[in-house]
Image 1 (cartoon, rainbow, N blue to C red):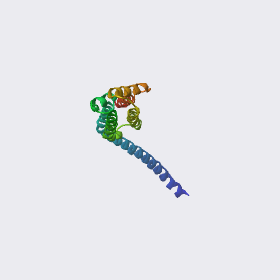
Image 2 (cartoon, rainbow, N blue to C red):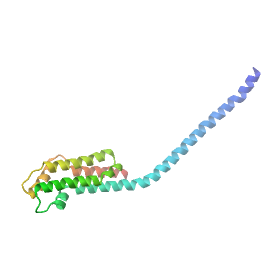
Image 3 (cartoon, rainbow, N blue to C red):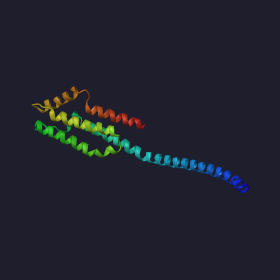
Image 4 (cartoon, rainbow, N blue to C red):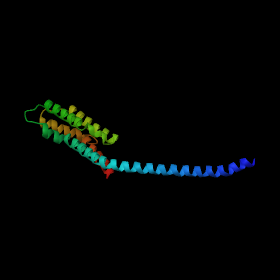
Length: 168
């Protein structure tokens, strides 16, 4: 029994020291891991922030290019029919969207959904608008957009601006 107590006399303090060292070492390693992770994230953010800002710029340009005024200025010619202009606008919007589709990697899912919605609403408005002359067609498209609660392009621009402000 006395030998057993002698063994406990040395074993218990050794176990306490071992446990203390183990937990301190574990805490130290966790802190080191967190520091390395923080350094990694900071280095990544230096590379990612410019890409995100560029994506916001490109999406803002997308919105500007699919606005009615810009589309009509770029695409309407005096000898065009209304159907030709309508088709040219629809194709231009789709091409602009496809050109900028990779930007969804750098923006939030909600913002990308707003961009898609703006594209879809602009195409729907253009597809539904009727007129007898080119000038009347463009005016009717503007009227339809104005009659909506929110202009889809203006709403998308505001969403882009708001999300970009969160990065600053």
